[in-house]
Length: 430
Image (cartoon, rainbow, N blue to C red; front, side, top):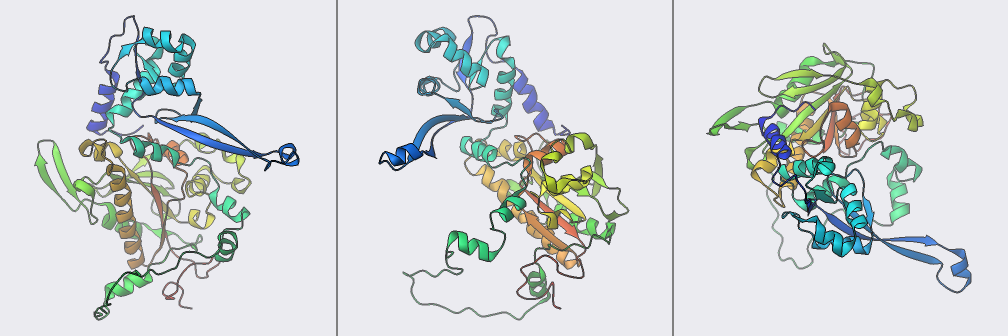
């Protein structure tokens, strides 16, 4: 991982330190963040139908979710009771838990990382748990972050296979959508507002439309890319808030003026810039090249027929945007990845903190899209991304720094091969 921020370093040092006794007798506490889900799973059974039943059989399962785990863990009712009575903060002797619940059950939950032990045998899960604690995640936000991350998903292919890739397919599958516009039935009189004369900014707003037709035969000028990056991500000023606490100004607002979102760049067809991976440095208005492991990026490419023959960089662009080939053809992709630990430094375990990070990415993406439109470039933003693949390629640790959206920039094609929503006919006047 290539994060040099002193705050994260300090958090990891804290995570490595012990606040418990490592000698026997062993002490135990529950992992910091835990959600227990009672999930119903159903299946069709013909024999049950023939015997007069509905034919639908249901089965209830308890599943445990925690940030440090790679996947959900199935637990039984007795294990749910054990986890429910174990404190996530206070270390208690393991002996009474073994007496009440059985040594085998306690050991299984220790091995799963749901319980944390104080002795050397359980050091791995203890370090993982302490690392999560040091980052100050709110519990429900952490669970949502884990559950909403994709890895290796060809979302565009799945949508097309389901016939949901156009308006007609959506209407057939889901029926009539909710109304496009909304007026309150309990409202009173309506005041019609005056309209100001149109200005150049109105023209810019109307011209912005998501680009699905990039000209892969042309190069994106480095000056055009640089202008968009500078207007969106560059430092526009700073204020000394306190010792070791500088406050950055960008062109977009940010909760607490913390500006946690980083721009990671995947460049392919940029004139004057070697294809590869980069990190944008806002104070220096510069791009820092990052190492790229082709074999690691292509490790799962064989699972996708649509990825055959792609280079590592082309495959990464394709999988990053969930198999949306029309977006993958952008000349440069900007990965918007908040450093959660900077935001959560102030908003510790706060129920609004993760939402603020999402808003931060939204502000920046709109600034980027308008800047690209003003420069005569096509652009888009998508949240249908494979976060796991992006994190692996750029060396990001998902609980410290993780992508929430990807934007693309590049020259538009001369012809619209893939449909774009452009009702004002500003992008496609012909």
